[in-house]
Image (cartoon, rainbow, N blue to C red):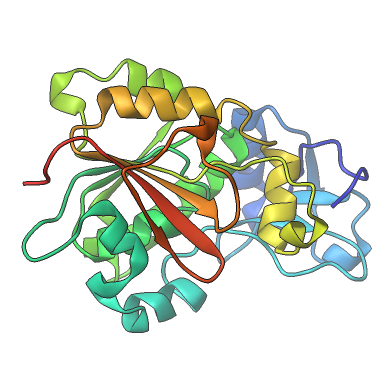
Length: 266
């Protein structure tokens, strides 16, 4: 998005009915509450954490504002992928080791909006998500709460749990019983290639969250604690983290998975 944002949104409600919820959210996140904003085209602030009747949304404002970024496990692209995404034949499923009756426990240490976690939970994995950004965590918690209320996806959402935490600290502090079979990483890296910034989610995320400058530390912590494997999602042509050679790679059109195999998945 460039330099026009300070990195933090302000909180607004789409309707006066939702003001109390919005005020509580602003207070919890220590963000500025600006009242009711019913039309993003007329909004003064460039980025809203917008409390709407559908859910919490991260919303750019202005006349050419794109649609919102939010955690939605019920409709749209996520629903389409759940129904028609290719099941256990998907590359992410192969990367984490789903096959036959094997459904590993997974820690998604860089959860973002939870899309990959939801795919893995759809396929039967128990997934713990960690997200360190308070704003993104709020979006994710809201999306998960709505999913738990929806008949079609509630059973999937029940396999997902969420922690607001710094991933390295969370992984380092796990005891033996908490260790997952698979730790999944999709870190956000600084990009020099402007075409890599096209997706609106990526643009807003970079602004709100920043890049993952500690990715190498995260990989080392993950390899130390994962039971069976660490899976790192990367842009297809990007270097490996820390130049650490994976056991093997799965490559798609735009992305790839670097798999660090530690032991056999049972």
